[in-house]
Amino acid sequence: MSMPFYVSPEQLMKDRADFARKGIARGRSVVAVQYADGILFVSENPSQALHKVSEIYDRVAFAAVGRYNEFENLRIAGVRLADMRGYAYDRRDVTGRGLANAYAQTLGTIFSSGGEKPYEVEIFVAEVGDLAEQDQIFRLTYDGQVADEHRYAVMGGATEVVAKHLSEHYVEGASLEDAVRLAVSALGQTPGENGAGTTERVIATAHLEVAVLDRTRTQPRKFVRLVGQRLDALLGERGPVTPDPPAEATPKQEPAPDSPADPTDQVSGQVPPLENPVTGEPPVAPPIAPSGAPPAPRPEPTDPVQPPTGPEPT
Image (cartoon, rainbow, N blue to C red; front, side, top):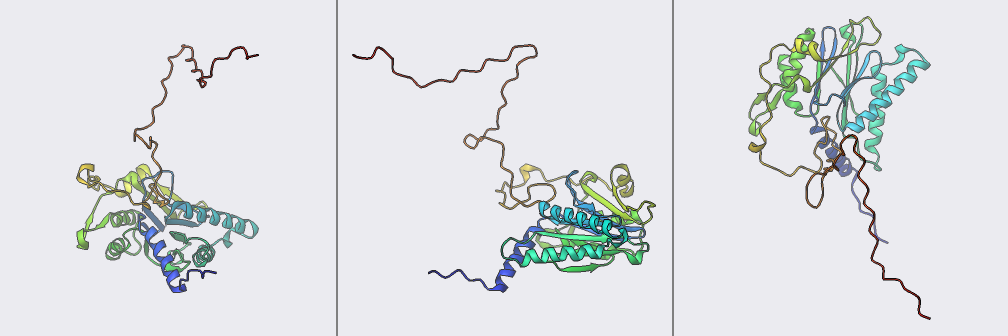
């Protein structure tokens, strides 16, 4: 009988951690910033339908980076847990700490089990309080670790560059306008060539996903998305948007098999192209008959040639 292949537990956990970190690093960064009236979330997300920042309950919000389908499952599970707890007990019993603990147990169990791959996600669970001192931001990693963040937090993408910019320019108790401009400016920081310095790019407003937990709202639900003219007014004049490099100036490279497949950094592989695999040409639609014209007759199926039939020999 052949012996099974042995891998030490330390090496197995290291490989799983490297796999998860690699997937998360491909995502675009998400920034959470505390300001005078609540907590701000900003992310670069060209998609207007697939959100990285969402509402969980009255005072609790959720933000994530990594594989979209995985953190969407976590978000839905959090919404169900919060609704059930709020209905069975009281709405005040739904807290960010309780949801963070539930997420930590789920992520830790998935990471330590050998039957499935670890989740390639990092998430924020934030709760806004009646006072600024009561605001809470919890950061959860792929292996279930929980960190209590203060002032600001960054995950995904070029974390070190974005966090450095925030640490140098963050001001306690800033207004919403100043916080939005700081967060967007930090997301625009990109490492220079060979790691020397940083360059700043201007991100288009349509590619930004911005939301806040605003404690000054009179409604029980404190989550608000900032879009359109309101976001433009907060950002002010920023200069021309940094264009993408032209296609002819970028050397053509084969895409990696695990490259992001959609604007929200879902790293589930590439979508197969709708083309003929033999000729490489796109599909051609059949011609459309003019209005009022009778439909074209369908061609009769061709039968295989049969030998002529005659009288059977006697």
